[in-house]
Every structure is written in C-alpha cells, then in structure tokens.
Image (cartoon, rainbow, N blue to C red; front, side, top):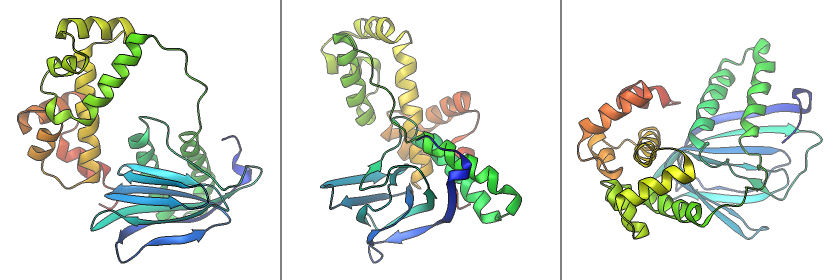
Length: 260
C-alpha cells in the first residue's frame, strides 16, 4: 500500500479478550480494520466474498472499508487487538489482505509498540504512530510475482512445509529426507544447491520460529513446546533458543506479552 501520513486518520486502537459469548459482528465498517490475534484461534467469515479464514496466533487480517465480516473464537477465548483508521485515496472493499509470509511474528512486535504508544496517547507522538502504522501496512502488501522455480526447489518447498507442520515427528534431517524418499546426504546437497544454506540450520530455524509463536500465543510449558517442535528435552530447546535469540524462552515470553 502506498500513501503518506497526511492521508491517515487514526481512530480506535484497543485490545482485550473475546470468548464464545462475545461473537465478532456481523459488521461492516466504513474504515480500515486491522484485526490481530495475539493468543488463541479465531474464525473470520466474509459472506459477500464467500471466504473464511482461520487465524491462529500470531496472525491477523487487514479488512478493507465496506467489507462485511463476522467471526468467533475457536477455543474458550482469544486475545486480540483492533486498529481502526481511515486512509484517503486507497481502494475500499469488499476485500481483505493477509500478512506477508513469515512476517507475522515481526508484525506482532510492531503492533505491541503501536498499542504501547496508543495507551500513552501523547499528542506529540501522533506523527510517530502514523509512521508506525504505515510500516505495519507494508507487511500486508503483495509482492511481485515470484521467479520460476526448479523441480528440486518445488520438492524442497513441499517437504519443508510438511516438516514445519509436523515438527514433533522431525527428530533429525533423516525424517525430512524421508518425506522426499531420499537419503539425508542427498537432502543436504539438494538444499544447499537450491537455497545456498545449510539444511540443518533451516530445520533448526523452523523449530525456533515455531517455538517463538507458541511462547507468544500460548501458556504451554517449555517441555510441551520442546516436544511439539521436535526437541527431546526442554533444556535442548532452551540452549538453542538462547544461543540464537539472545534470550531465554521465559525472557522472550515475558518480553513478547503485550498485556504484561
């Protein structure tokens, strides 16, 4: 999205818990609505578009003006924030935009800062809040068409996607290689040729990224999270997390909690 701060008018920026007794909508706002799920799962339905989304924290959706939607939590409760704003000169709905791939956690950190500034509500910080919102909106822009991929890259993408969805079963790279029906050494060579990085480091990053998401969006214990992402022991996860993230998992959870 392309605009400047003069085209933005900030409205509500609120956060809190929603539950099954508090459905979302149905509603159709005349302004933009940035809806973000910080904890739990939420289903959003767009009747006019024939589309349904299931948002699992950290996740969100930018709903365009004049777009009818409704929703509900998919668990006992969810923690969410909304940011309402008007943006002149931009297309209206019906429609919505989703975060760019792999950016949800980073966008949530920007939203945390936006909520902090909104809570302070200092007039001299209004320009900063508008610039921050523009940075957030950049995370919902659609990029250019991807370059053509090779057969090996397509196979790797499918395998790593499956691995990421089943990390609890991916104890070693051999388990990932089995998804492709090849040896571990062949996987390492294929990955390095296609991505110019280490397959082992890629698997480790998948584990740590999912750990970040679980630390931020659930109250699960470190041992439970370790098992879900494929580590045999909580201590192994803690050591890897601290080495590559610079914080212990507990410190990261506290730092990432927008309601702490």
